[in-house]
Image (cartoon, rainbow, N blue to C red):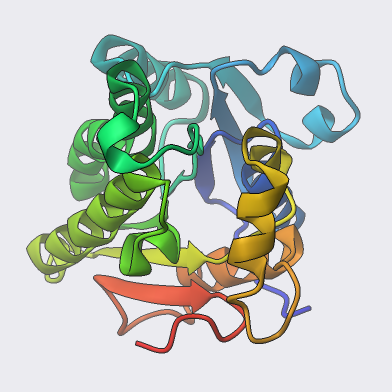
Length: 247
């Protein structure tokens, strides 16, 4: 494992109470960052051994502007700065053909997976600009590049995250804030509980390495993107797909 030094830096990880988000939060904390977790349901993390590694844990609904803005204020009040923002919170949603996709589920997936990224960036970037710089990493998906059948809302949302990342990267390229995203293929997390076995088998078959990615592999990529070693890449998409994505 490559060692980074995030001492003196504060990192916010959304959806950091479990899965990839928890792995990212642990990776950054292990490298010395003061880590703040924003999660809709953080109670289990607060009472766990894992939660003791973090400097603050806030209950935040990242789909609600007021909740996000309050979380920013609470984080700044406790830690003073936000140097790193990792937009990881997300849901898979159900699997239906697009023309049968329930409207309420479409709205829920788009709000959680795409609008939340916009809301968090909108709330945090002004403070990063005042500080003179920062790092933002958005967690997208290979589905946002290829479009997964029967997962149109998730695919559309993650495609939007990729495009939003590119826009932000260009807007902030000379302002000291580097913005990138990662695009994982299937990862062994609780999101799989929302998917049918048939769907999981179909998607896994598309990965040339023949296996799921790991949380640790994704966390390592995010750690590099948050580090000073990533100095000339912005507005970019970094695949963690086992060879599935080739562009």
